[in-house]
Image (cartoon, rainbow, N blue to C red; front, side, top):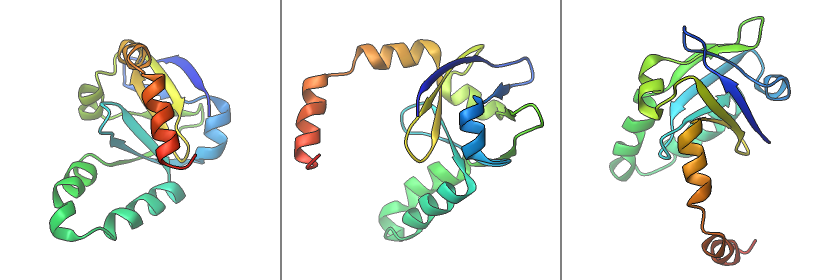
Length: 137
């Protein structure tokens, strides 16, 4: 949970907030998100995510599986709580110096700060309310 502002160092390492590090453990999986950010899963959440992915019909989900699996990287958190973000994921999500780290339920998302702000500004709360009603929330 939460939203944090952090900076990416010159080696593409990012320090995760201490609260998130505790839940992440010492290993994580980083993967492209459809929303042009990087999703970070702990190993248990990644296993649950991929189990759902593998349960989908192969012919219908093959493009989705390629998108996800081809961009997935295992990473270890170092002793200072930093995680190395591969250059390809930084490029995909436009991750530069200023990063927004947000909690997203079963995972964490890493956003280019400007893109995150644009995303927030574009949020249509009325449409969100309609969706919540539709989903029975």
